[in-house]
Length: 155
Length: 155
Length: 155
Image (cartoon, rainbow over the protein chains, first blue to last red):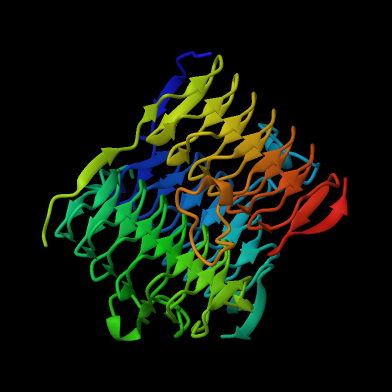
């Protein structure tokens, strides 16, 4: 101690953007796809491999990881965190992608702020309440909330 | 694909500051009021229409939205997210402000880190525990925690 | 109104770095120690007094406060918030450090994204699920989740 770290800087690298996308920097976006007319707020990180459809809003402070696919017209609230590593072997999977889980979000899905989304499938039109922790597939169109998230009512 | 997005940058635009406010950038503050001697940490977003009193601390990573009014001497912890759209019609209200809900926070309110605050009234002196999800008015002075937040004890 | 605030900027000040640390800016790191080969993602704040071991990953949007000590080979997920002030006297302790609580994290601890960690001890090898709110010591090696966090199963 003390040494100089190796520095990187949040940036936009190797991103496929659709038409009319809006981005408020600073953001850290790399190796992902963001569809037509979608919006990405400030302080967002989207990792390599994530795919976001068209007409989505990705609000400030959200984090979207590899193996997450989001449909069209989805709303990802502020501070929403996606997870692809559930530590199921008792710790981080590290670079062993075979141990990661995928998340597939349908169209017209709304995810409230500060929600946490483990590797799951979420059906079209589902609403996830703010602060929910989604640990299982949400296959019935409805409103879900809580930790772990449960169906409050069908839609 | 691939197109060039329309870029914005986190900035401080059209904010009414009281005296002796301190701000640690980067932040994204626009169209809001921040009272005398209040502090705003880094990676904070405060939207148009939000009003923050004097002698408050708005800690890093917090998000405060339109229709939120915060009194004096309040503490908003790290990563606290306010919500004005509860998707009550099954999806985002979008720009239809009539469907948004307002939040009013009294004086001397302390909100723990990573808490999520839906549109509610919170009385003077209330303490909201870290990680709580506040879905109802908190009108009795006390300590609240959990998801959804419940009264742990009166103060 | 309107006045000009006193501005600071997120920066790296007075940090002791081990060898081969990687940091993705913007970050706000001051007065802390970060061990050999650890990684710090973007939009992270680490305060004066925090100590992080070697071979750790501190993911984007995390906040680590004073009085937090983290061992080696730990994973701190995205949006994890540590807390040292539990408002136990009914409001913020302010600069009265005697009222703050310390957190000690062992080695090989994995903390899922959006978790909230109050002042506790966490044993070697513990796994904290995403979105958990840890309010008590976690002394048995196992997987914990929920709000408040409970043991799901021993490891």
